[in-house]
Image 1 (cartoon, rainbow, N blue to C red):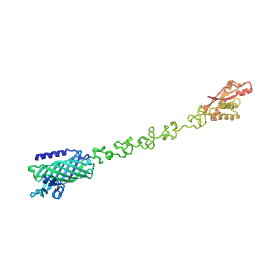
Image 2 (cartoon, helix red, strand yellow):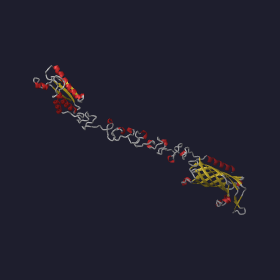
Image 3 (cartoon, rainbow, N blue to C red):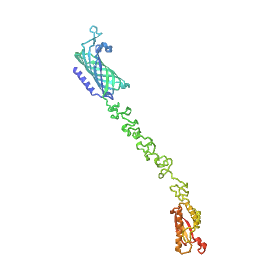
Image 4 (tube, rainbow, N blue to C red):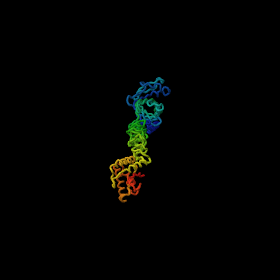
Length: 466
């Protein structure tokens, strides 16, 4: 029987050391404190209620060693179960037995300050999760062990209950009562079954929290970087709800859609890529606005609220003279004209006739291309009319009568036409608008046989070039 008891204890110890974590966070627990041994229950073996009728007669029945007298180490097995090994010492100075004079009575004697040693393996089930508490931890346990009292030793079957009050997640105060039923045989009849009570502190330990954020590595999504529980232990330095490991802008509050980077103007472009981060804009312009939608961003647009072409810095082309021809296309931007004539006024036949009426009165010095004095007002009038039609081009043509040689007349007509042209250029008419030609006596409009006819043939004509 003695060998069987030792084998039972060895198996219990092996199972205890091979068990799992103390709880889901800490793999181990250590308890230590004082214990009390009560042999009263053994004296009432023939009467079951008598086992418990003096449970708390501490002064009469309990053997208490006033010092650290037990140590328990345990590990969690899963599902609320733990397995632990307890070592305890005590001194038996109160041994309860039946009175020899009256077997119904119990007497307490000192058996001689017997040394008490116990080693026990215990499987415990905690009800804490079942009742939904984080402070009160009731439990039941069973197990077995080996006990030495004085010169006697015996294996025991153990069962009992306990209650732990957790001050913190890892520190608690534990109370436990264990009934230890002795495997007595004929040679161990003097070895009592008994109650052993324990009171002490319990410390859970072994949970790994590498980053020290209060979340154990097994539950920590970022075990090497401290973070809050609500983010599973991952840090969010800027507090924008995007974990640092996923945040491209760790120190700046941003949006999840932009990997934690900000978009201050909310235009869908992150500040880092936004050339105008404080004003909502378009992707085409790197986040800068185009208020009037004309394709020219505001910073380059001289007319921010009015649409206009890029070629005019975002402003609409003006029509200064209001003739429906934009200045950019208007060859006469300050003079109202017609669309057909590129914004310039079109000279009328009446004005052409007026020009030629003036031209007929131009007087040259005889045989020369120089003007007589009274002709200058006429030339100025011609220049004024040409100025009104800046897009029109004119040909100045000179003619002579038939007097004199043909070659001389040809040259004279050319010189006189050129003299008129040059005068007009001097008065501001663009040279590109004027040409001159001489026809001598070849295009008479009257008879050269009369003085009046010759006078009519000596003339200057102004022709519109179309």
